[in-house]
Length: 235
Image 1: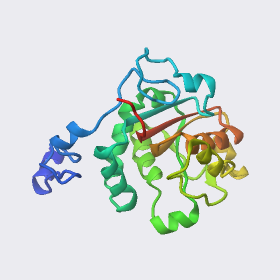
Image 2: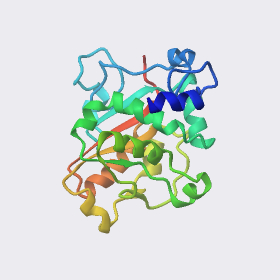
Image 3: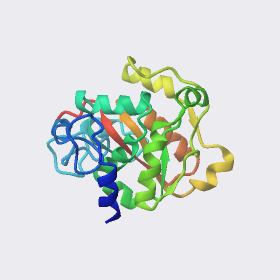
Image 4: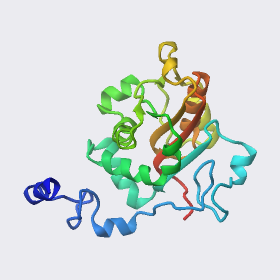
């Protein structure tokens, strides 16, 4: 009743500027354009492919990531890119709850096994210019909904890296190699725990892999990853 009364006074709006939705989020037209990722998909990197759920693609079998599993809610394309970029660079932090709900659905199996949720960190100088960490803004409501501990600062960037845009897969790996760590005084918060690592977009997985390495070196039992969108979803 309270929610309905609030909606009557402050009607829900569509983040994409389309027709009014039933609840705060996207218009019906925008929903049809977003390509959500469903099973079957690779259990390792989350890429959709024509194999039964739980199987792994050839790339994950030959050169596995440091994290165990990854899930993405949707494909990173024209439909999702605009929403994510507005959130990331346009201060549209109201998108965080929506993206958290998308991840809660796509990564439900990972959330069920997680002990805590941690965001991919920004370097302090980049955080100062952007004013918020988009991964943390998504991870916070997600952890609250899932009743998991939120660990916003267990992984830190030890150096400022160049932007990953325009780099090859190997170039991305070199760019973030050794760029993350778990400070000694925070290791007790990850020791022996399965951590769910959150970010907005996964391209090659290099950043998530580097963060997972840091968490494992810091004592984590295992690391899984969940993102809003992944590049090259193939669906």
